[in-house]
Image 1 (cartoon, helix red, strand yellow):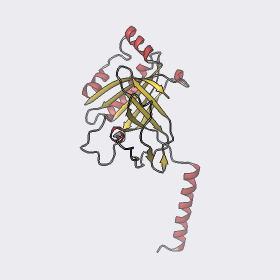
Image 2 (cartoon, one colour):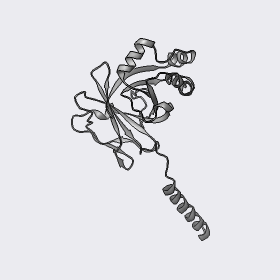
Image 3 (cartoon, one colour):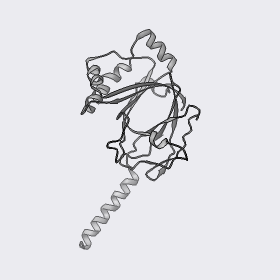
Image 4 (tube, helix red, strand yellow):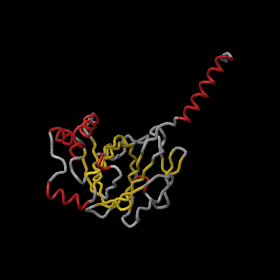
Length: 228
């Protein structure tokens, strides 16, 4: 057993750490759940969220595909820690919602000053599985080139970039792409009009050809924001 003075010093350190955690809480990590839903469900999910010591109490949005009969519900969590064990409560009878949920953690948000306070009605979702060892190059492309080019488009508002949270025991399972970028625009109508008049939203560059050309998977989908 440690001597009394050593135990006292350890107790004081524990108390200081406890007080520090109360006064300066741990930073919160934004996490989203990407949940395909029935187009007739009106954004209602048939399961409850359960994270570390919390029930779902965050925001949500419903997106309807711009050119297909499908919806997705995006649940936003501001109180789920990256190190926490993430799980879903039991889904209701007959539901396969558990297998459809993809969990992503925010890694980067880019927003021009002109966009502050504005909310768009269109989301262009870009899911990418980069080449082996290509995460850093993908991040560099977004931060140092691509988003600055998108910001020149008048109807562009912001981008939120996420990385897949891989559950334990996920090896060998089919997983969605590890990187998801949600590009927000004023509306799908204005997005279509801009594309018809000006062509691609961002010009192709040597870096974009290298990053996207070497990626294992690239998928772009356009969504109208129905509920936010």
